[in-house]
Image (cartoon, rainbow, N blue to C red; front, top):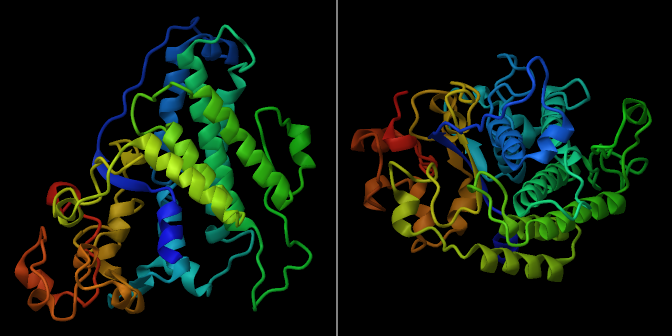
Length: 391
C-alpha cells in the first residue's frame, strides 16, 4: 500500500539548472504599468506574466529578498522540509548543526507565528498565490471570445493556485497528535485569498474548514482542466493537463479518497505519456536529478537571477557539492529506510553502503578516495550540474 500511495504522488523536482527564462516584451503606453485589461487582452502579455511564477518558485531569499535565513528558498524548502518530517533524511556530518531543516524533524526550535519555520512556508505560498491571482484576475473565463492560448494560460494560473493551497493545507491543518491539544482548531486549514479578496475582506478572513478548502482546490482544478483542454504549455516549467490530474490525485489522497486518488494518478500518467527514470539516468553523475527528462511532468530550475549560493536546493541536498551547507551536514538516507530497499533495486545505488565499492561501483563526480572517506549512507542522488561540485 505504501508503494502504491507513493506512486500516486505528483513528482515535482527542483533543479540546479542554469537556464535563463525568456520574457516576452509587450508595448504599453509610456509611464504606465500593465493593467488587468491589457494583460487579459493579449496572450503574449499573459504568458509573460506567467513566466514570472517559475522564477519565483526557485528564487533564493524569495520572502525577504535579502540574506536573512537560508531556508528562504521558495518551493525547494518544502521538498527538504517534508523529507525531514518523514524521517527519510539524516545529517551525517560533524557539523550537522548547520542543517537548519532538521528542525522540521526534531521540532526543537520555535514554531510559533514568529518562527522562520512557520513564517517562511506561509508567506512563500501566499506570495505565489498572489502571482496566480494577478493572472486569474486578468481573464474573464466566461468570455466566449477568448482564444485557446488565453484560456490555457488562465488554466495554468488556476493550477498553480490550487497546488499552493494544497501545500498550505497539508502544512498548516492541525492533526491529532500526542504532544499538542488541537481540539479547538481541528478541521481548520488556512484563509482563502482569491483575486476578488479586498483589503477589508482580508481583515476578517478566518481559516477555512477542511471540507471548504478541499472543495475550493478541486474547483480551481476543475477550472484548470476545462480551460486547458487541448492546450499544451510552452514548457514543463508550467503545469499541463497531466499535472492538473496529478494535483487532483494528491488532494484526494490527503482527503483519504483513495479510489479517486488512484483514478486521477492513472489519468496523470496516461495523459503525460512519459516513462520512468532508467537506471542509467538515476545514477548519472552529471545529470542525475538535475536535468529534465522523459519522467518529469513539471519542474522548476535555477536562473542566474534566482540562484543563491546558500539558499538553493542542490547546495543543501547534494552529497558531492563542496559549496553550500551540504558539505557540512553530509545529507544521508535514514538507515531503516535504506535497509528496506532491496539490494537488486538500482535506486539503492545512490546511497553509500557501508562496504562502499565492495557493494557497488558507485559513479561520482569526485573520486574513489572521496567515496571511501565518506560516511555510510551518504546520498549521491541529487548531482551537481555537469558534475561541477566545486562551484
